[in-house]
Length: 252
Image (cartoon, rainbow, N blue to C red; front, side):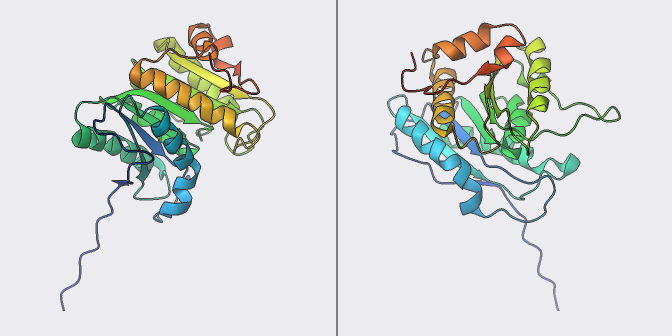
């Protein structure tokens, strides 16, 4: 009796979120959180919850410019060591966006382990900007090479992290940002004081910051003054920029 071949898992882009536009001129690729190690397939509903609201907000904000936003559905829930499955799926998604829409800029936006995937896949030729919110990063080990940053050269990069994050150490994202800033001046990092991993207390402010940065990076809109200042400031000032209460209510 012939054995049936095991189906090959493939990443995929979810449906375009929010209002549709006739002509797409920029794409936001949304990367949900994941686990450090897992061979299971993520739940498409639970995994996308953390980023879907951002996608809808972005498509509303970028409708006139022609923004499309898609959530990535990973092959596996885990990063899985050197396999770096989530980063590979993020890079595939950037290429898939170009295949669908043509030569358009892509902004990778990830949270948690998806933030690490966004940073790692930021070197894809279609990517012009990266947003990593509360990114999970590995503990620094003298025996292992540090998390790479050279691939971020030429991209605009925003990292957002709560100072009370007990799941993903905010000091690790600061150190990565400091290394990236040496090779790329277009790196900034905002700290959300006294907030945890989920950034529940500053949810609206974080969403407004992601919108402000993505619209500026993809379509050339003027950045808000705090983002402009953070990009221009030397380390550590531009990498420990406090996210103000009420950010987004009066952006400029």
